[in-house]
Length: 372
Image (tube, rainbow, N blue to C red):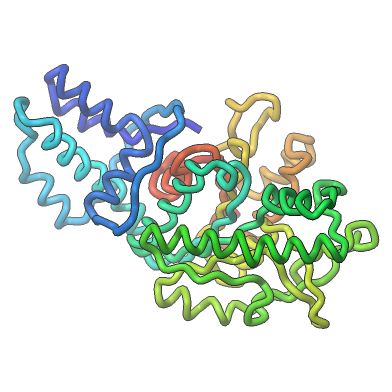
């Protein structure tokens, strides 16, 4: 997806070629929005990581509502003198960008969003830092994020350390007793606590959980359990343990492991867990981070991104064979969550730096949004 945070009206207000050049340079990537918000709010511990090169195009004719106090402050301020220092210009531009993000902050403030974390964003240290910083920033401006994760690559690594070979059937990990022990050890004991530590270091307050804790999730065997072993589905969700955490501005970090009524542990697909939790929490938005741009009209053409689609459109694309393979369970997860009351669900490109900010704080988003 292409997007730029460059407000056209702002660029037009400076006639000097040097000023216009500085404005374009400063606002040419999504990192500008992150730097503006983190600088003005001065969130502790938040820093902007290195960014991958991407192409972003301007959003045409976007004129967001600006709260009166900020609007008045901006309307009474004079354009920076052409001889002003670069730092003065940068400060003015940060304020302008913040005013652009205000209506989105107002829209989502106090609302619960469930984010499933995985794919490239989990494997790249730079992208991992980007996601963590985005999550903390959104929490600081009043959103109520819930963070759900898997950990496939880390599981594969530790299986290898113990001399076990990963096996998959139709995209699902074949999980025998030994593999289930390692899955629990890695997801609950290692990945989960590492993410909690990163969030806390960035200035948030995270609490690590799995589906077992507080009977948050009750699992049942997958219909193909004879072939898959201890791979489960979500039978029931009890979000009671999450509500006081969310109400007190903590960020729940949830590993996709749960037990059945007998106490047997199961490995559950993290997309499925995120979707069921979003429904149980009546979330405003479900976001799945993936390794592709989103839903594509033509699977062979990354430029054919479908930016927004409703459930009827999704079903038609499935019938036409345009949604296939690993995208099917992700889309079905989104559709199921929408059917249970989630307002919107998005499949976004986790390879983009600050994809969460792009999805939530801009009109253009960072992937495909599915609506009812």
